[in-house]
Figure (tube, rainbow, N blue to C red):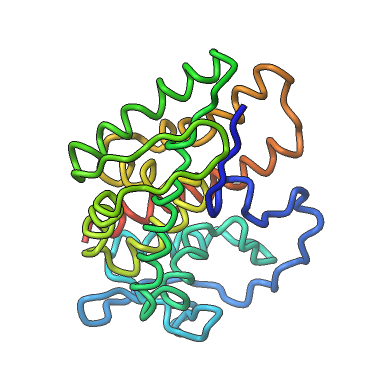
Length: 257
């Protein structure tokens, strides 16, 4: 079986294996959650006061549908605010506090993932895994060649392969128009899957969310079929999927604007 020598992958995210180890969140301090137009954007308000990100920036978003999704997460909180149950809010906070003004660096990081993309590193045996990788990943590489004009090299085993400069340039050109909202989603999905190509194929409509997630876990699912499922690993994967869902949802909500 092959390992992926790239910069991330689904196993690299620091997500607690047991939710009970997380410290309790703050108590709910508001009653009503509302949405108010603010120019061409929409603000989320708590008891009429501007909601803010952890960085103290105003929680203002470009699409009403996105503001409604945020308001839904805030309204659903009970006595204690649980950030784990607010994946879209957490991602929007990242977009506002961490990505806005740093778009160039985030784009560069996505391109770096493409340079060591999961789908380019193939097992040499057993044949069942070789076939599974080809079945799920080859269509993505064909999409990249046809849609982006980017032809990627494959590598067997764990030895890194340098991707053509032209291929990485095409990826960079494709994501150049993405704003902080799109980049936050794309970057998160890329780190969760270990694949910029899977992420962009999903954003472009080639793959649905569940299909993208399945493609990102070909190796893991093969191991499960051979050795059985580990409960804690399954719980971590479920938590990561919630973040993946939120990132995909954010793309759709922003595009409604």
